[in-house]
Image 1 (cartoon, rainbow, N blue to C red):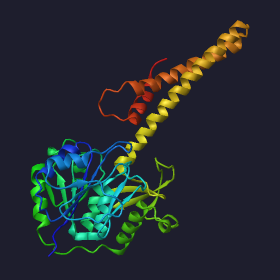
Image 2 (tube, helix red, strand yellow; image 1 turned 90 degrees about the vertical axis):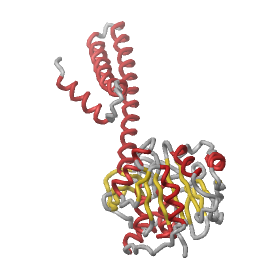
Image 3 (tube, rainbow, N blue to C red; image 1 turned 90 degrees about the horizontal axis):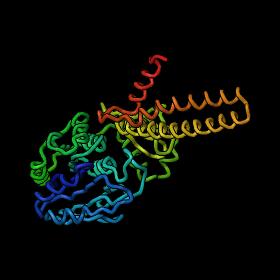
Image 4 (cartoon, rainbow, N blue to C red; image 1 turned 135 degrees about the vertical axis):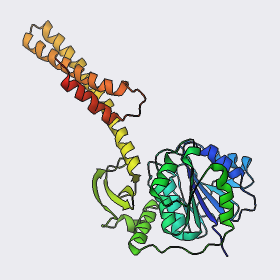
Length: 352
């Protein structure tokens, strides 16, 4: 009988170290194919295949689109491309980013679960935020196995912790025990899987097709979920809210997808960008009105000079509020939103 021979692994910050240790403990006769997504820069050059080949006994490579995959091989998502598992082959596609990443972990997990169901083992390793949580939940819904690195063992525990909080994980293991668990599962016959309800299956199909920008799905008027009232940070389009058990997610018409944590992080970044723009605009206004006030004084236009000087002072005071928000970062993890509200509150209540 066939074992759990489709192993999908996701990692981000701290992931290289984790993958090196994991791969170094896998035997060369492993009866499974391994697919890996590691968050990397879109413009960077990935040397992960060379690193893993040097530290382990399994061949590792960046696959090409349409490549037939084999057991005992490691396939790693190339930079700026999603890695998807199809029936017997690999699809490489430059689809919409998910959780601000391409490659992203969720599309890999989702694609493998869609095709291979209970044969899939999903593994979430060290990383920030929560990419991989939604994909791991799909693996479970399709009858697969979910393994998560023990957050106490991870260099960056956010991704493992999110997966544990939102998914009915089968095993939470220190890194040293994940490879033996994968070997055992690869050699253990699959007992069968769960049957997803039709609505969940339909949503899975829609999300999988959006990653590939399938025209039929893009042109559909109906969208899974409900309108959220939020805008996509990537393209500015409307986001639909998707509720998967305790997991809240968002996806726009063209496929950009966000977990709630990632969306909040993007909104925080957008606010900081807006604050920098506001600071620049106020400083420019202060400088311009100061110059106009000086010109008015030279022409003996006293009232105009006073008006321009007041406008300059007002702009400087407003700029100072924003400057305090941007520069007074105490490293306490407080977001610009809360810091801005705090500083504004102090300004409103401060004596004249």
